[in-house]
Image (tube, rainbow, N blue to C red):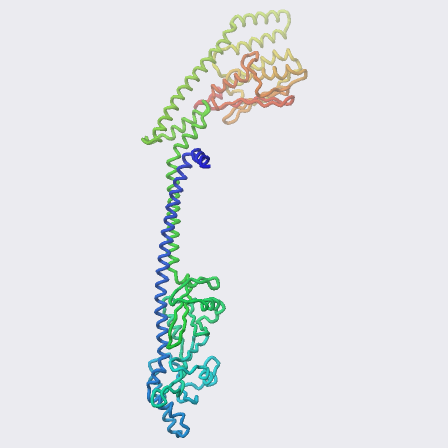
Amino acid sequence: MIKKWRKYYHDLSYQTKLSILFYVLFLVVTLLLLFIGLFFIKMLSTEIYNNNQEKLSILSMNVENELNTIANIPTEIHRNATIQNALEESINSELALYDLSSLQRKALKELNWIIADKPNVKSIELLNNKNERISGTTSHDQNFFDGKSLLSIVEESPRTANSGSWYFDKELKESVFVQTIFSTRGSSKMAPIGTVVISVNTMFIQNFLKESPVFSREDFFVLINGKSISSTNWDGQESFLPFIQTKEGQARRENKYEIGKINGNKFFIMSANARIGQNEITFYYFILNHLLVEQLVKAEIFIIITIIFVFSISIYFGKRYLQNLIDPINRLAKQMKKFNGEADLNDLKTISQSTSGPIRSDEIGVLYASFNKLIHQIEELVINDYQSKLLTKEMEYKFLQAQLDPHFLYNTLNSINWMALGKGETEISEMVTSLAFLFRNKLDSGDSFWSLREEMEVIQAYLNIQSNRFDTRLIFKSDIRDDAFRVRVPKLIIQPLIENAVKYGVEKVDRPVTILLKIVVQETTIIIAVSDDGPGFEKSKDSTNHSTGLGLENIRSRIQLVYGKKASLSIHSKAYDNTIVTILLPKEFEGRNIGIGD
């Protein structure tokens, strides 16, 4: 398996290997940055949570101190002799009404002094041992607190010497503190002599919360007093009560926080235990997490944006660097891979020239220098080879011309022509004249180009000869506009196509065969098409052994020598239907117009 992967890696391109290396290194750096960012966020979140925990602990102490101030009022009453005397004397049935009123006024005055510095005390009720009111400021005895009467609250409260009982309404707007008053003097010391009922405005708790920089409108406070639960968000009790009840059944650690989910929202939750007199009360703070850690969210966004920015910039410049490093090699390799012969030499030369610039001294520079040297050497070899081929073709052409002595041939044909005329054989005379014209033009070693009109004269001479041979079996048609006759083409470029159609079309069948010559001159191209409806032949058919010695392959070679890739010869044949040979020639060649005659 390892060998297989190793072979796969070795077969990868140089660019792919460098890309893999780059992306692996980049992934490591990105993961490192991400790890550092997460570590930073963790430290920042811990710092924010600890800071808010400290603020909430101070808030708990303030609430606890304020409630303890209320809970210490009975202690002051125990120390006040006037109030002690009033409670003891008020149960005397022989006491005159005037004396009772005097005791009540004195007790009320003392109570007012006690609560003077306690602004959160709404009212204070003092009852003797017979539950008779000694002093008080409220008149709502039947609906004193939370729908209960004053006496029912007093009767519900346990009579203990060291602690009182707290009652909080559900919305934490008010509360009541009840404690039995005991005698602190004489023989009746520690005997219960009355009860104090203190009505407290607990809105100070909500004021504390509003003044705290930690709380917002969506946060809330829960107070647990025994089995009683009160909250600043009592309307939302269904959402937090299951959490509270679960936590109440577990061991709690004082002033510890956690992150809990309530109604799909994450809350920072801290609990704190408070001792109010001898009572154990628990506070719960529910702070919406995303509001609490707004700084943390901003830090996370900043880190994420930074990582994305660094990632994008690194990818962009990394890809550009790799591209600039690999492109020269890829371009060179691609062009070398495309080289299959002489036809691709121009493309290689173009690439070689386009990459020339400041001379590089690195390995790529050496590679390009060697490549350019190789291209120049190939170019020289190709030029030498072309010159050799041209010389060979020229020698072959001259050899064909030298096979017959033109003067001997012309004199002989001329003699035959006069003998035929002397005997009245006009058809023989016409054939001999056409033959002389045909040979004279084929053996002419002058200019290698002539007009289409001159080419058509040769074709007509050839057809005159073949018409006497095939009679009605040979039907020739042409489709050439008048302005096309001035176009200049290589000599004897069309006549061999007509001869080829006669040889492989007319000769092979005993029915009439139509040969159509169509020439179209476009803006940049000359289209020459010769078609016939003879038996046809395969495209690969060898056509070099014609009587003229200039077959289709010979024509293709000639036009490629003259025009290069700008000219082409194609053959399309469908048996007993249509065979067409098409030549495409450029009107412009090597910067001079050789297609239009003067």
